[in-house]
Image (cartoon, rainbow, N blue to C red; front, side, top):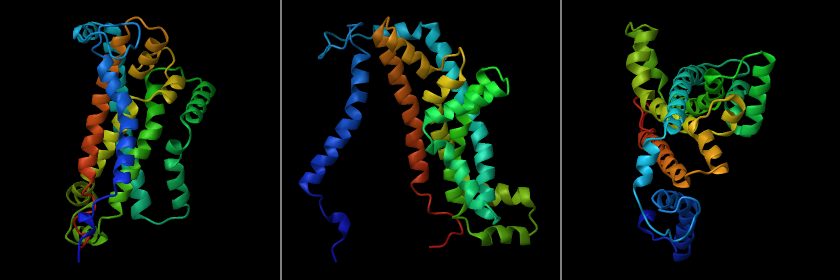
Length: 271
């Protein structure tokens, strides 16, 4: 019997797929194109010329480095918080049964399902009510709300694939809870946590809406880019920074994809 994998897709479907990919990615390619244009105030097509000078200009802009450093620090700490809270919550929901478990699962994923502006307004209202000044840590807390969801979704799916007999066998052989987690659970969920952390970092690094409501006077890299687009000075600099953001966020997403594509092959899961 002929395998379905050898069946060629219809020409119309191939054209539609190509058109969809072009619609999604051509605007990104234009960012790369205009990062090297000699025209600094408009978007002429084709560009009048090409130059590498904007790479040097961007490198020497202290405001770019300040905004980028803030974004990296916020993303790193938000991801660390999300890894701890998301993993603990996933373990509780997937490995135990208790009243209200499904409701808790829904509440955990709710922040990423709500529009970002709703989350931002809610956080700003809560910080104002508690008289918490807007600072670096309010940005971290805002980003952690949706980063936890990303880690939780990856971890809970992997927890549910781990055979309970592995954990029972570990306990029967005299291992305590920490040893069971270290030698049995962690090797099985490690790639899922790494993938969730990568996705969380990428989401936090380029987040705009929640940051707008929680940052106060600080500017992360996406906020800096919005301000530069409103009051452009050297427009290609913004495109160079956008190109860097694309690369920074693309690599974790690509890594997460390769780490989770074989996630169904978990020890003890059976065939």
